[in-house]
Length: 521
Image (tube, rainbow, N blue to C red):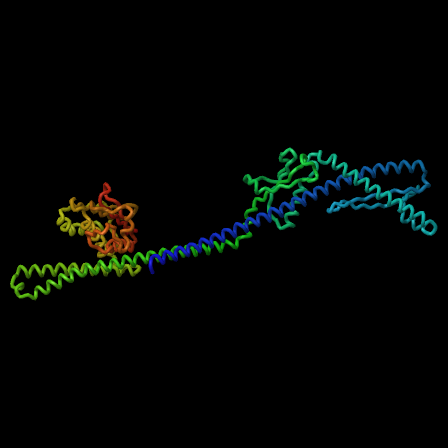
């Protein structure tokens, strides 16, 4: 698959995911906004009903007070009349009952009683006794009684309305409202409308001062979260009092209505993560494929050189004149031997690739003293360093140096690092190679440092990738396949260790630091 096709596929999938995410976010925001508006409308409706209930209570109170006054005055009048007319004359008295309904209407009733010097009797009993001879008179008396009741009701309502309009809004809100009853009204209305949530309410008087608050607030609520209603809307605007209600768990209640969206968001996030990871794998495999192709081309070229040299040397040995010259024969034999070793080294590099196809290499682990191992390797490698007029120093500071490793593979790791120091040396500067050991944090640190051409900081991690070679333009003075350091990292990590690259002393050269667990760990 071409790289442009992969990028096109990635852009299309990214656009699709962006569109899906946008639709989900938009849907959630619209749903939350709608639920919030519904909540506010329901709560305001409850506040309006509570305000009406308070008005009904106040109206009932005024009516009862007026009725009580009139009845007391009427009783005094009847008592006085009874004293003047004597005890043998029948008198009547009307007892009124009124009730204010929730719809605002006033219902009333009257009981007409007759009184004598001994006891009072209901007018209905009197009617039964006189029904045989005085039906017309009784009917007239009933009509007059109902007429008086109607006139009394009408006058009573007018008096109550006038009294409320002229005096009610002059009273402080504390005298007009029972706050405990107000709390009961609010709680009942909220529960009946499906808002069974904890709430805090406060009453604000006409001067803007808080005269009552039902509870303490842990934090100051936002203005948008406080619902406000008018107490006694019929009052003059300048005399109006307000009721404010705050629901501390309003947001939780609203979000609980859209909990179904959470799994959708989680699954979308998983799909997005899978897509990103898949895209990463595709590009990584594409990169590895290109690097492997470069490796094969490079390897083919490298194998072709020793093979052609050996082939040419073997053909020269067939010449009888060459066999007669011992010096020439020795030279050709040496060339064949050197090229054979070189060919074997290349084959070994290729075989190292098999390590990367297995999750873990098969090791023959044993106890090894890292100080002794590093000293032996340095002494063996000293001849090669001296060949290039270089020096190698050893600094063995690790007091505890016993590790549990595969000696052969660890030896190859250290040889690889030292061989890179030789290959990437500065031609105009004598090579200096430093090998050290030390203990740190209960672990063993082995460092190989040189004063070569160094590695730029942005490539310190990439040099351990397979087939990666630090870019130097089109010039490759040193042949390689990008497998050496990848092999080093794999062996170290399979021994439960780590390796990192740093700049050398004075930012000259490169320093590789290997960290391995001690045997006691």
